[in-house]
Structures are given as C-alpha cells and as structure tokens.
Length: 281
Image (cartoon, rainbow, N blue to C red; front, top):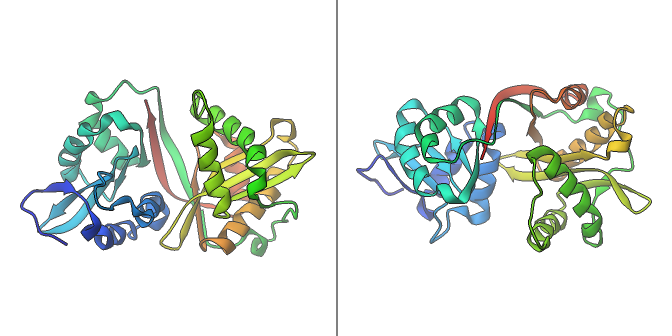
C-alpha cells in the first residue's frame, strides 16, 4: 500500500487487500462494500471509495457509488471523509450502513446534500450461521433458484418490492437496465423464487457475497398471501439455500417498524448483531 501524507485519498487497486481487511473486521456489516471491491470496484480509473489513513495504514473508508456507505469510520475520520463525499454527491441516492457511522458522516456532509426524503434511523442488522432446518424450522420444497427464462416473471415482483420499500419505481422509461440487473442476479444463482400459475409469489435475492458472508435483500411475498403464516418456511428455505450456495453466514437488515418481517426472521433463527441506518434523498 502506498504511504501518503494526506489523511484521505482515493483508493485504487493497490489498496484492495487493505480495504478487504478493513471490511473483514465485521463481515455482517460490511459485506456490501467487500462484495463491490471483489467485483473490481477499486479498479483502474475508479472513483468508488475514499480511505482515511493513520500512519500510512488504512483505518476507515467510505464507498460512494450509488450509496454512501461508511466502513469502520470514527469521529476522527468523519469530517475528512465527508469532504470527499461532497465531491461526488450527485451520484449518490442514500447514506446507509452502521447507524452511528451514518449519523456521524451525515452530520458532516449532510448540509451539502438535498434534504432527506426519508430517514430510517433504526434498522436491526440480523445474521445467522445456523441453517434454519437445524433449528427445526420447516422448509418449503417449492423454493428454488430462478432460471434465466424467468427474468420477465421476476421483474414485476422485484419492481413491486422496490417501489413498496423505497417509495418510487426502480426505473423511468425503459426497464432495460433494471431488467439486466435482475438477469445478472439470476445468472449468478442469487435469486430464489416460488412460481405458481406463471407468477412469482415469493422471491429473495442474495445481493452481496464476500468474506464468508452473504446479504439477503429484495424479500417479497405477494400481498394476497400475506398474513397466512407462509413467510417463515419460505424465507427459511431461501436462507438455507443461500447459505449452502454462497456463504455460511447470512445477514440482512430490516426496518424496525416492520414487525411482521422481524417476527419471521426471529422465527427462523436470525439474531440481531448490529443496527443500520438509511438516509434517502
């Protein structure tokens, strides 16, 4: 790793190992950023992440593509990293990550961003390394990986879930780019579904994989089947398959006001290991 007199700088290919070591301090919290780094996010010409150094050692970083995501930041690093985040504010739609780090970074950088559209200050971060079936949770044999010829079946479910969660549609105009993101997840074996009568009735995605952890996202059950006690077995099966297919530690975060989801995740053995926050603008 190159030494620098400056406390912060853009990270590049020479910093990959140090950045992954930083993420490995808490894989459940930092799997998103670690996954992007492994996908080449610090490649030549990239401006995806900025690091904060102490005596030449990388001690904190912030990811800045699409989302501002702090990794192992501290009060000492918030202001210097916020100065870098301000430079790329036009390409970021949210701040997200460990609650105290998001709060600290936002206090420094927030005045230069649009007013928040929503602040989700308390999002339990949950994780498990025990397959639900070993806890006696019944599995649903209908859950399976989606196939590439099912992209257009998955798309409406994914769009509905995104719109319900974020508050606006995931695309304007043509859905081609969004559809391609769905296709890539399916091609990687990272979307699990139940399809009945030509329609997706349940889905869950593995959004990130790194450092022995996988992060579940995009969990959705068709509204007509909610409240019938189906969610636990469906989610348990998707979780178990993700742990077998991708990484032994499964993690996700959920809004604290989503009582049904929290109840489901507890029933299948997920335990709270931290707290996230998300600021949408």
